[in-house]
Image (cartoon, rainbow, N blue to C red; front, side, top):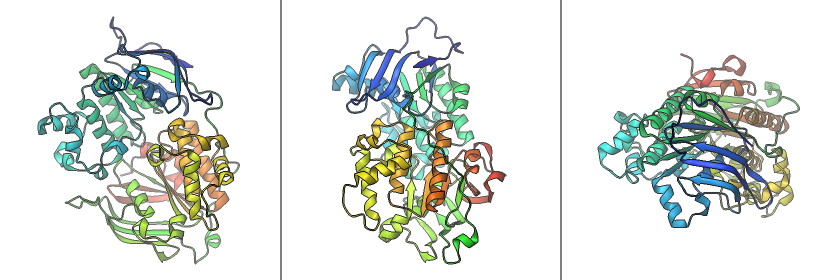
Length: 501
């Protein structure tokens, strides 16, 4: 059920709402509820925040407003968006609605940006006026530093926060009447979160936009929202996984002299295609001994994700040396041996982008099993069920597609896919950023339990230092591509991920 919060801070006046949903419910063919019966009214010039636990239906409601429901899902109840019911519109009218009136910026906007195009071209292709001034004005309105040459960069040379704002500029280029955003502050530090909150408030006021934000961020809601709509999931929609015991940090005797684990000496790392070759990592020395848990924290753009990608072999544009158990490790994952690929696995920040939308969960979990010795074959239904159980998901989720899962469920599937290879090192990039507090704690408990059971090395990138400090042995603080400090996690919990000065 939905629970609209009372007492809006800005009255909508006598104007009719631009969106009205009455008892709107979305179900899958097997009866699973993606969106419980929800009633909400949304007005122009206001910001409406959708809040609730993972699996409560926030993303599904946003997708219903643009007529993009998961395959096989059915909607009941009433929905009116600017006088239309999106999921009942003919294809041509639905495209026109999305193109001219309702814009959605998804939870992983970076995946929707063509990596071959510059920021300038990405914005210009949707703007009625595609001149340089119009493009730069849009970028500036989205609080992007236009004087740094950002318009000439490609998405791969942008931080996560910059990618989100470029996607927002593309959405605003269409001059929509309704702007929908899914977790716009996920994975961002407190400074950028505040900038996004004030930007949304500015857009609602200046453009008379109806802004709808799905978020787990209470600060964002308090800062910019006129209304808060709280969604409650069905009782079985959010599985909870708790560790039965905390992992004990590995001792030097446990590790032994011949097992140093994963090590890196990165003199510099830069983005491919950057003519100025500005380094995003500089003079970084890092190690992940067997059985240890390490957190990487710092502001957005400080180089945390780049370091993970270097370790995973997905960012070869760097100088330095990588080693696994003292043996050289190739910079490119394609040049690593099959055994090295198996031993180092990455759980990316955005599982929806990493998971193939056209393949079931079961097929996607079966594929990495081939990396394990003696696991040749394509089926493995019993191993898939075992993997799902290990991350707290029922076996029948093997038949679902990623779009039919909640954010927390997709994150668990992404972790299960990495575990399928039986890794010795698990690299986790912002795996709790788009989750509610309880689900995020459950994910970290899950990783702690798996680390203890399988003696894995765990490396976690996060903007939630207090959360990761409770689950890691060491926290490294990055800023401007350098390590500023490192030490026991309990001593380095900096609110919002801000690096100490």
